[in-house]
Amino acid sequence: MHSSDHTDFFSRGFTHGGVFHADDIFSTAFLRILNPEIQIERGNTVPQSFNGIVFDIGGGQFDHHQKDSRIRTNGVPYAAFGLLWEQFGTRLFSEEDVRDFDAAFIQPLDRSDNTGEKI
Image 1 (cartoon, rainbow, N blue to C red):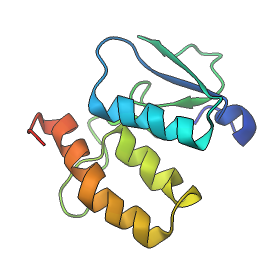
Image 2: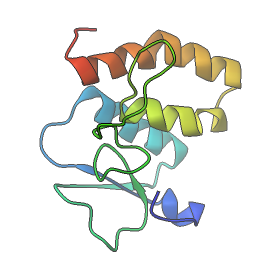
Image 3: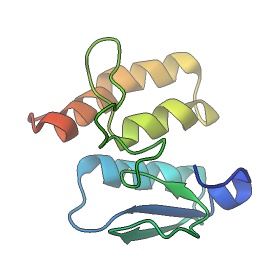
């Protein structure tokens, strides 16, 4: 997170350029559900002055490309969508529904993104 002001935080997003993967697409869609007005930018480097939510690039809270990336207790590694869902899913659904959707839908997507395994 590059901003402590949640209004600014949800008004802009930044993700990597190049080919979109499922976790980038679902991350973008989820952020648009949270704020339909969010503007998503793409590039190869996060601008130092960027004020907003950064995902799937930049080494921050919602990037899963570091050596020490988080892995769920069941062994499924997080991808960007899983990290965003974990943080913000309860803004829309109950904790139980967030857990259930993570297990049924997001974990297979995250596993596929991290391992190349087919869904």
